[in-house]
Image (cartoon, rainbow, N blue to C red; front, side):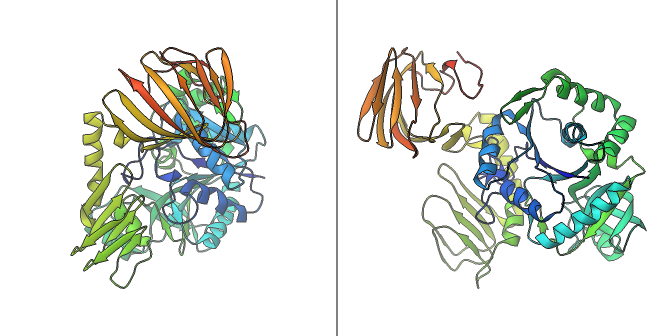
Length: 475
């Protein structure tokens, strides 16, 4: 009976802005080590016996991002499911369950958020194996974290009667995030656990319970998968039926209603959902002044602070209990006790229509990336990097001309009815309205400087005629 990991990474969380953004959320960031959070999630599965290749659930905009990050750590997914609309975890898990059932009626699902930190990987593997044994008996198992403090930011699970061993219980009830006094009472009680959002489910049992409590979700999930299209490693769900699913979590749809809910209690997991900069600061390595300093940071008379420099020197003097996070185009300065209010800044950015809530200065694309260097009235300068073997779409622009200068690697350029090979220090000019394409035929990344000039320089001024990556043409 294979265990099919289900990695949920369709979120667009902004609680860690300015690093995490709508188009590049925290699961794709290297926040706690050499690997990103989604890479850490995939790699920790390797210690579990009888584990299958993961099913990844994401959205269309992030499909190449997650595929590339898994490739970097040599993880091959069995499918990357693309949701046409965000519908929370219950429909996403339903689609994964139906995929797993195509392989075996006895398939188990290990459902994991892609953006959590787990330091105790041995404890994770042990808990997963315990949960699998219980799930095989028909229970829908959640992982409960033994609380270490009266935390008010997590939901709780109250354990009932004992199942197999001291670590496994029938779920008595799920409890919403408590106030401080209630959380202290939960901690003293000893039978309450933090709800981690991780699950071990027999796929057939989950679908049975979903059909019992949310039959329309089960029906529409089946229709969306039946009408899905395969595109490389991607499974594109049929949009109309999947969008008809209720926007509801697996907790509210099934776990809080079913009589088959169980919890495996896990201590020593080192679990953290890093839901704020304060939470990340709590698990970061600190110096003698209780500061976590990442990157090029200089301080004097600074204590109890988290300071992170991504692109340049950050200097701080005479501060206590602050968070400072520097990126290429935005800097956050906040009191640690109010770091969660960064969402208010993101809301202001969205209201103003500013890009800093959605994208970084460096924007990842399926073929590589581009980064804004300078801009002014009627001009814009970008640094473009094209991966080996990759190519941009065959396209044209109504409002801008472009000048490309190669600084590293080799470019095969389509410029109207001509094709030309460019190497370092060579350039070409693409007039307004001329069809063009850029391809990297080499073995190393192609880097070039692009100078745009024209009356309108927005990214939506692209008409695509051909595209390797299935993007819809835009006028």
